[in-house]
Amino acid sequence: LAKMSPKRAFYRTGDAICDEVLGLLEKFANETLAKQDHFRVGVSGGSLADILCEGMSDLRSDFSKWQIFFCDERVVPVTDKESTWGIFKRDLLANCDNIPESVFFPVNASLDVNEAAADYERMIRKAFGLEKPEEVPSFDLLILGIGPDGHTASLFPGHPLLGEKKMLIAPIENSPKPPPKRVTMTLPLINNAKVCLFGAQGRGKAEMLKRIVADRDSSLPATLVDPSEGELIFVACDEAASLIEGDPFPRS
Ligand SMILES: O=C1O[C@H](COP(=O)(O)O)[C@@H](O)[C@H](O)[C@H]1O
Image 1 (tube, helix red, strand yellow):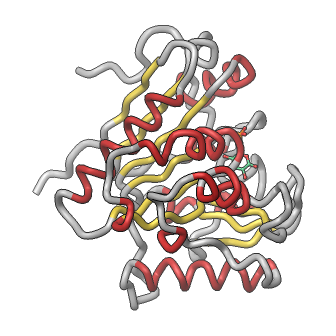
Image 2 (spheres, helix red, strand yellow):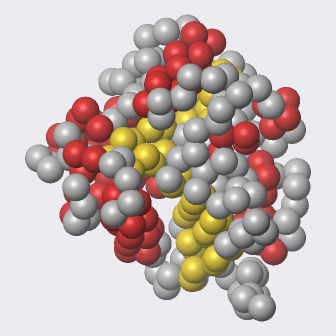
């Protein structure tokens, strides 16, 4: 069978990306649940977490069938303002009654960073029912951010973790962006997803977004997100997309 060519899309959304990101999340969740029992999504911290916490509970979907994982997490107590799980607990779960806390799979941040990464990888493999170490889970959707240096999840420019081939979840003890201790999905896991969806909001993202989407600058971790069998989608507000001319992924 000939391999399906991967799908790439770039959406410009006017002033804000939240409606488009949330709309795509709802669409992928419901399309997935029409075919299988669970929708498995990975979420990010920072600006994307804020968008999800703002609007996720309004989505029309059977949340009891969702499984929500973290593309990366800072290894700090859940009460720390840097904890992404803490943000979801405080800004989403505390204000809604239609998303059960049990659909979240948080990183055990009480462990040492190395053990937290190994434990999270085991947790993901178990949730996907994978027993063989060579099997790589395929998330239905990963929602990813773009940092000011082109990092995504906790994969930073020039960091040896960009070349990681074995670990699916890796520890990082020297993150250039505080806090230093984190765990992160690695590229083999990210690039096995069915859909990788980047969101970029604001003028501050414009230069990086151009280097990632138009120039395909491979020194930037976000450019290395390129799921070979999956979809790659960028959602950018007009300001974030202001340095990109036309459609970077025209359909032939
Ligand atoms: O440190 C992190 O930064 C990135 C980007 O955050 P943003 O606020 O600039 O969108 C985020 O995607 C990642 O999860 C987080 O740990």
